[in-house]
Length: 156
Image (cartoon, rainbow, N blue to C red; front, side, top):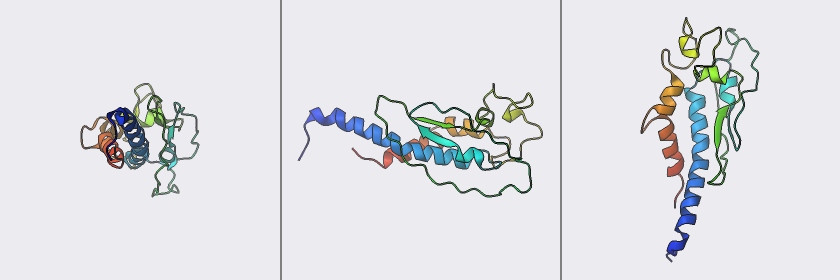
């Protein structure tokens, strides 16, 4: 039986909330896979929250040590459903997160991540600003692809 038109706005609201909840874990998983990886700490610290994420988790390990793990295994975060009028935050709580996403104000030894010479030895592609590519890669890639995945998994 068809629903009355007065139910349309409630259905659209539910679709948006469900789609955003489903897209959140897809986005985090892609950031874990695409991002730089030194110790595994940075990848594990991507989070979904109802409030802004603060970069407060310290990483005192020697990421250049030959004893560091050489593989990474991440699992998808659980979906976080928030009301349509509330933000859903995705961020990294590592204290060096700004540096790793190449924030121009976040410098180490006076240089940004992209300016580091010799180039940092990470799993991110050399010479590519992985975060910029992911967030601004355009339709069909990166962030847009993950939003599409999330919204395709829900129905009106």
